[in-house]
Length: 219
Picture (cartoon, rainbow, N blue to C red):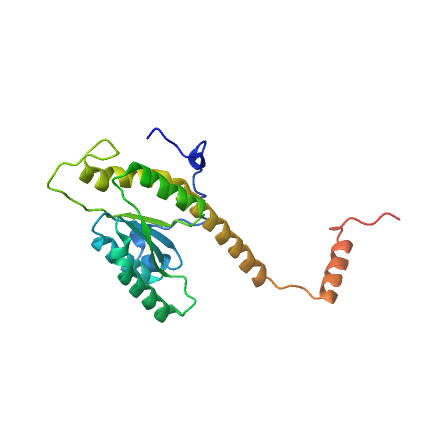
């Protein structure tokens, strides 16, 4: 872990903005939880066998989230990804941004984990959900660039390193969404308030001047 790409140097982790209202996860129903995934973007990472990751991606895409499935051999799952995209377009229209895209990632190689994280951050792609479901195994001991055994690196070291590198991106996504939500709430509050007409505004101003609520102009 000695090499740190320029994009990560000097990065400071900013805590996410606190939401305006607290929500208890214990009180949420399954429908409420899935509704929070609509319009969100998830990154699902897997190893050589992405069967579990593909099942997770299918569920997330079905409820309305966009998914990036990163695995070691993405070409094996291109047809399945195309099927998810077709289902998303059929369910939500041809212009729907939901669906699945594939990414090439070998979790057992440290340099590929760094490269994938750097590319993800450079594209400024939002990250609401990170799912680690690598489950590779091998009956033989094989060393890798992490300096350890390949199975352990794929299922533990690689996902841990990638999660750490993408935490700032997840924080940035949360902060952006909180600001957008606050802006939308202010817009709705302004829209709900009655805007006075010209005559009403002049009459209100005259009453305020009579009551001494407004400064009188100099003679």
